[in-house]
Image (cartoon, rainbow, N blue to C red; front, top):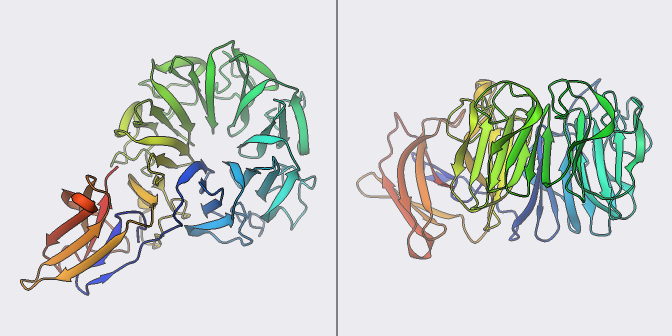
Amino acid sequence: MKPPQAVKTACLLCAALLQAVNIGAQSVTKIAAGDDHSLFLKSDGSLWAMGYNDGQTMGVGSGQLGDGTYNNTNRPELIVSGNVTAVAGGFFHSLFVKSDGSLWAMGWEMDGQLGDGTMGSFPYYSTNRPVQIVASNVTAVAGGFYHSLFLKNDGSLWAMGGNEFGQLGDGTYNQANQPEQIVASNVTAIAAGQDHSLFLKSDGSLWAMGGNSEGELGDGTYNNTNQPEEIVASNVVAIAAENLHSLFLKNDGSLWAMGDNVSGQLGDGSTNNTDQPEQIVASNVIAIAAGGYHSVLLESGGSLWTMGDNVLGELGDGTYNNTNRPEKIVAGGVTAVAAGGSHTLFVKNDGSMWAMGANGEGQLGDGVHYSIFTPFDRWGTNRPEQIVVNPAYNQISSQLLRDGAMQLSFVGIAGTNYALDYSFSLSPANWLPLLTNTAGVGGVLVFTNTPDATANNFWRIRSLP
């Protein structure tokens, strides 16, 4: 079942323990989320992936995990063993940069978003192995639905892929299956949404191009544009885009948003779209991520906040209710955030990676298998769960006591709170909280309770964020 630190499941009637997953000793340093897949880098420069890898269209898979198959996976698997420095996930494709500045891509290529010059021809619409696209000088990447962006170390912006809405910004509406230069210099950051693109210049100005049906460009209209247009003149330091909305930060720590707001993803207290930037949070925001219909922000104290769609638990607040205001999910210690179509990833300052939301394709990487009888809206988790941890943890043992009680002993992190949950079944699991304790000196934690064959055949110990 759940592999992360302190997410262990004990079968109380048979006193058998399911094993957790340890994925090396290195900490997670960077994360990225596609629509239904997830990618992360570890401190040794290795690239890992999990989730959707099939994308069958006309009988052809997509291969965005880059593992040489078209099979989904619900566990993180190693894709590149080292030297990866940047990563991005698109809808059915993935991009990464190596330490030599080379750009690599895998997945769906029919619209030319891989930039390998082929644009695919049936039945070769995709590649399930990383392909080198650019040999050197690439520093950053972004993946949209069917287009891709990257930066070179001279500050130039390049684009390839679908261009129906002008998202490449080249002045046309024609696809490009090879990288083309859009801006010659001074670009410092990029973001790609469903059919639109954003970038920052070194003077702090925000620029946008592409689809604008919901006002996501923030230019005061709902008109598409196939050339970059300036939206904000200065002071912008970070950007995020997904589906049909956009987010940005200013250098005073304020958060601004524009575009689609049907699920409250802009966080302005309404569900009304806006075609101009509006301030959502006045200060202290340091990082942002835009999901399909939800948004994530990180404040300076390391607290994690979410807003928007929550039908699959992607907000991580323990409910499946949408919210149109930012709500605090984790009080502190978070250092990085990423958002996919309906799932959310974050990293804490101990190098652990956590996830919540949709998991029907294995994108959370927690090893869960879903039955066809599991309700669709429960194909995931609505609370953060730890996916990657230090292997020094995760030591668990059980002892059946003389009075019929079960004692579960766990070695975790001293001073960390852990919960004991129970479920009658694992197909599907319906975890209910039972007890919460704090690990003592050395991280030792002991739970004692009595198995009830009619109510709690399975227990798990879960760390609380």
